[in-house]
Length: 428
Image 1: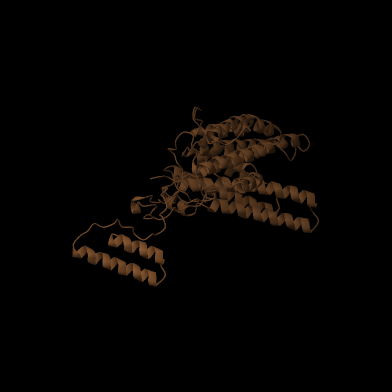
Image 2: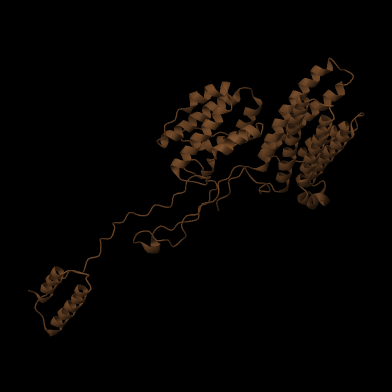
């Protein structure tokens, strides 16, 4: 049975955790700088908790991307939960902030208990509840974000915030809470069904069905081409040089995801593309998880990955007879305008897949019919002059003449054709 080719929930959760770790690193740097000016507010204890949160997110990213179903994941979420509890107990918080911190603490405690119940034997009594309420921690995070948004709007209305500050806080709110919600949502989905598909996956081509079985092509009847139902799932055993059909991604969708997912889709695309470009002949296979981690954490490695992947795309395009010279162009663009190479590369991948076979959102072409000579227009049967025979043969000739006379009477044949057929039948 062909398995469906989907992006695993652990990959999405791991990428979100890695991006959150990057943002937390920036927070740590800003915190250290602020300690010089406001040491009574920015304390060493706060710095240590930020560093622990950074370490927990990096640890979770590695565990999720490496598919390590271990109870240690609960430890990572537990560290983050303790950090939120500490923030909840901080004095001088507004009511909205304290309620939001309470929701965040509940969300992280919930995901910690869920990981302990589903990834170990520690809490067997909670397993059924965890499977049914796997989405609750992420909902708590979204509720906390909504509460903070309402408090920002309230303070903007009453003039406590300038509009520029409101926009900056709103952007930070969307990034920070959105990433945490993604980590909790996709991690919980993976805990509950590691091989299942609880969540919709990114972008999947719709199923196209060929003509129903029994359709006849040419003179072969049902022995001719029988159109099977086409499944746009993966081709894990695809021949060298052949891309999997789901490599195709609608270009407009690809561009929007690159812009509005704040880097998450870019890293998912790196993982997908690395795996699918392993079909290139005469090229060594690459581990998509290792390449993803290198692109996220090693400076400038993403530029190198773009260049080498574009070379593989050029080889695939050449094998299909498509003109392509992306490698040098993408290398230059990756240095100066990093968002352009993924667009150019995906566009070329789409062209390669279209050339191979129409798929999903691509124009669908029905199976080609076998080439058969077209039937000649109907002509009355031509009979060879009969040999002189006995009376029954003469009777048959008379019957045939009578039939042609009827055709002549209704105008189906001309007088000349009737006379010619009559002479043939009578052997004259």
